[in-house]
Amino acid sequence: MSSKSERNDRKAGKKGPFAGARKAPPGKGFGASARPSEGGRGASARGGERGKSAPADSASRAPRGSTGPDPSGFLWGRHPVLAALANPARRGTGRLLATAERAAEIADGDLAHGHRVEIVDLPSLNRMLPAGAVHQGLAFKVAPLEGVSLDELAEPAEGLLVMLDQLTDPQNVGAIFRSALAFGARGVIVQDRHAPPLAGALAKAAVGATEKLPHARVTNLSRALERLADLGWRAVGLDGAGEQTLEEALDDRPTVLVMGSEGDGIRRLVAEHCDALARIPMPGGFESLNVSNAAAVALYEAARKQAG
Image 1 (cartoon, helix red, strand yellow):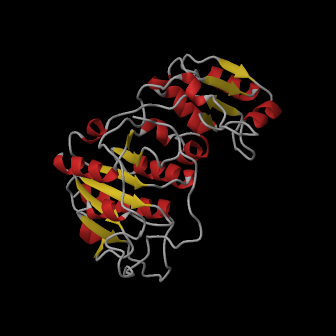
Image 2 (tube, one colour):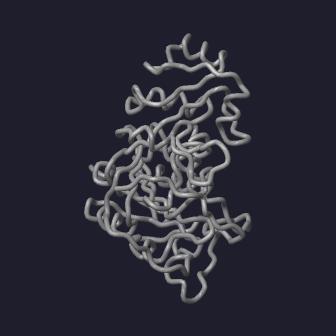
Image 3 (cartoon, rainbow, N blue to C red):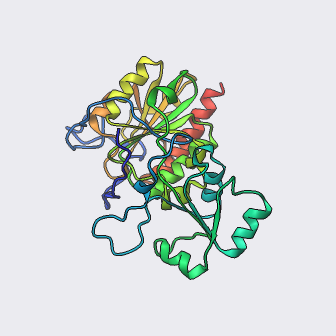
């Protein structure tokens, strides 16, 4: 199943789906989206951390028509790069670039894990990465990880999983990975064709969590939820128009938290495959939360319920 990256085509200017007890407009069904129903042809796919690496050249091709450095496959920043170096799936792969100061730090701490360090000057490193990348003198050019199948991620049925319905903003997805790891989630499920690559700005925002937390890429989220239900999981979708609060909807059963995009929320067919749709109460009166903030709140509450 393909693991190619998608462009970031997130829509702007729409209200987020994580508001308080707002009612959905007529005709929107369970979800906050009026887009066509979800397509796709399968339930399980390859995904996240500590899987096999794809062929190295898949991370090194520049996009067609690109006029600048190709950021796909690049990790940058101290935490993302050191986490990747420590990942056994990365052993013997990739191109590690560091300034002289960072190379000395890696050597002193025995942090390379068998990778050869190429020492580069700061201007050269800046030219290789997107403008404004906060690289801290470290970059790692790597192929995508193939990761795990849905069944491998979901068995046995216990704890928490996070499903992202077409979230394409790298900063938000990276922050959700970080929160999911912090609150003990088992892994993250994304749609194969509508998820950004786990590299670049996303990996930077995740602060190394993408190397430590498994993820699965699936073709069809609705069918993935059907498979998860067969395996004993219960799905709770976050929706500002949900009739229940998050506290009311969650319990100690194995739970998949389903998060929709900020522009459109959870799509209709995905929402219909959820066992419950829940809102985050907002007594302060503010209309909505950023999706990564909402995910952190939901993960905290879900982890609390899991602990009994």
